[in-house]
Length: 208
Image (cartoon, rainbow, N blue to C red; front, side, top):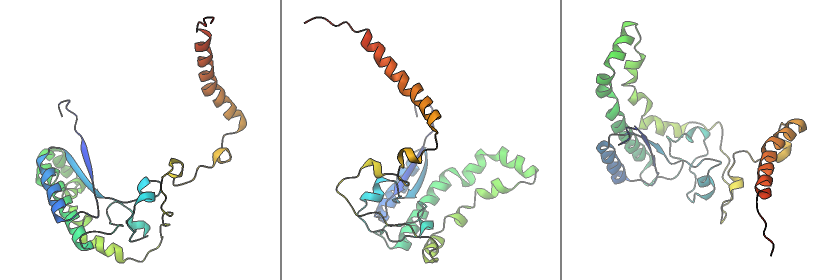
């Protein structure tokens, strides 16, 4: 803040949150000047939590892995969790949008209206049609068209080489031809080797 840098804060709501936690977050967000966004903790393939999360995934519906739906078990009843989440998002939305945003963007809105463009003005009050706990609950009842694969069995340790959505294929998976790869190796590793050689040649070796 002292440097005049405006930051945006992204909070991740865990499905284990209760009403008190949501309320504390809402109050805290109103006390700070920064823009705050909130999404739902979601394990994704290619992330560490996909391999280490101990809670059972409640749905394999690909559409629900969008950080706005709960795919892990919730402490609150699912409908209540969504109600608290949307209530929190609405508080954050009204903090920087609504009438407050209209006052700050009055000149922009006026120019758009003069040209018959109302999208920007209508966008300021579109929240309820986008964030709606009833719609989120209805998404869970939709037929599943594509299922996510389940994560592998839990292991003691997580190896970084498995944190990929697509496993590395090595040399055979690259499209570089031999000439291009030879040129790249000479330019990158050749320069490194040459620099190391020069460092060695400038050292003074004293006799024992």
